[in-house]
Length: 108
Image (cartoon, rainbow, N blue to C red; front, side, top):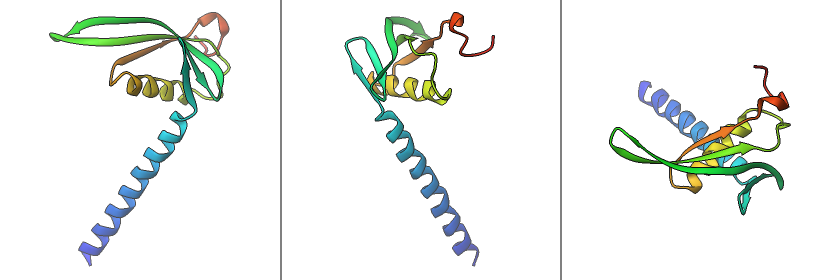
């Protein structure tokens, strides 16, 4: 009986994890890039500003810096999805997203 419960619990966990991956991939499909602009649902969202390299613990690290163009995004998770999308696009590079404070997206 314990084995059956354990097996059932494992299937539930695996199913939930798989669903999370599918949902996350769907949200990444909402992004596209043209020239230096990243679009979300075909609307400009961010712009590539810089590509930098640094040494971190003796390893060369590639980093991309983007500036958020549209500060009227529906939820902050879009920024996390943007970072994941750019990191995947550039094979695991580190990503920073800058937000102009003068547009008042977040209280400072």
